[in-house]
Length: 239
Image 1: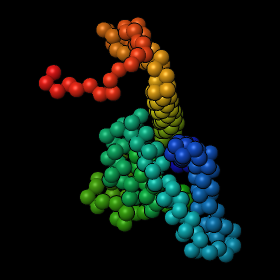
Image 2: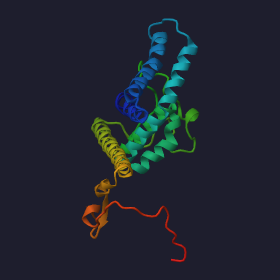
Image 3: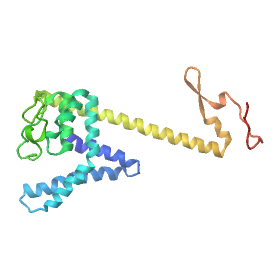
Image 4: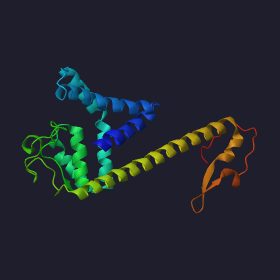
């Protein structure tokens, strides 16, 4: 969860709002929403300071809405770089074991990706309201009967597996982000080229065509262009 809230969630919000030129604002918005969802509940329950319950509920709903897509993108990344089938099955079957849907999707998919058993009672004093018993939150026909995901009981070796899963997911999304940025840059360059062609016919030499062997060669290497006077329209009927 920490890796998602401090790395992946921020990353996805940054990328999403970058399309509108508001990338940094997306990252700040995500972190502020996540902080607000924890701050009011912490103040009320840990410090015994009265807090507005409606404000607590509103902050949680706002963060849940903002985190809806990032949580699922992170879970999908875990599935791609881990055990895809088990991760997807865990996502569909066990996500409801946790009270918060986004957290359930993340934990269930991560558990399936590395084959570890997660769930049951929440850690005391950390997230006491973030788990459900199996009877309340899960599918009663599943083999796991105590609110836990199927898999091997958690051991020290699973920590290294989880770290590896996170790092592989980081590499995956960075490569996809680079490829996406390159595609956008290439498309922008193509548009700029067409605009130059419209303004200056000599810019046709900047275009490339596919030659035998799937090689790209400049248009000027195969044709010669010159500007002249021609008809406004050409009738090809019957030709």
